[in-house]
Image (cartoon, rainbow, N blue to C red; front, top):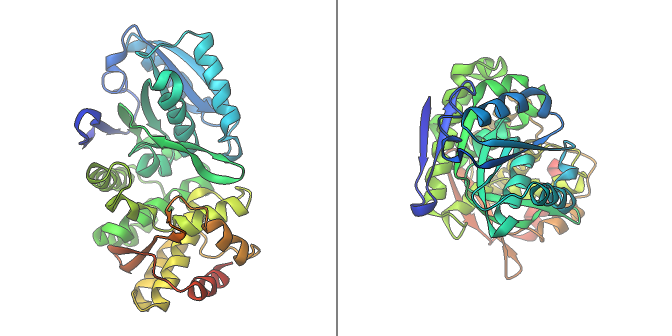
Length: 358
């Protein structure tokens, strides 16, 4: 078992990386003897892992409860949050009790928002089971829901008490959801780790075969990257903003497609869009742009999505949380392994790039 520490003073926590659930009771669940734990899980993940997770809760001496919601981004809303509040009230949850998110990024966002707001904050445990959640969304404390068709517009920062990752869970994912998670992995490589990018390029066959050893190495490296950035800038006041690479365009595509596209797929399209812009303004080489596109394609991720209105996408981008005084801060690649943040990009160049991918 590997352990990655996220140093955030009194909000510090550990990420446990294993290939099974057998150490869950002795690690992430260890502090909760005689306390209640509400397992929040979607209808897809429930059939695979709820029983194992609840067994570990009982082994730790805690009292398990379960809330199952229908799977899908369309259910990441205040209505689902409201139903979980009701379940917590009905079962008399107190501040010493905990919410446990078992599943992907949608589950973690919803459960984390409930934990942050119920009784002004109760304990929160992440047990991510998707590539996206294990490598990105379960770490760093961003929680929230979609509202009025806008992605993640309601939310807050609320750190988990611990994260427990079982990499063997990735073998149960449908192919499309599995590869979607690599959108965030490639993002981390482009913004901060050229060696990781090369590792992905050189291990495509193993990744496609879901090789546990290769996946564990990739997950661990991504956790370290995310932990390093979050520990420096917990609430996105500076360097953490670079983790939004590909997301300004990606979130707009996700919303405009009525969430028919998976998050990692939209991030992939967003990365291609902003990399196109970087080439146009002379920041990124054509060679690096080609490498980015080829890696995404080999990981079965989309690089264009024809059928959306570029003007509508541009309009939705103005609702992005990174807009400051009416200007968007774009995270733009300079080379593989380095990005910079700028708001000084001509509107016409942005729209031309959007027309290329939409």
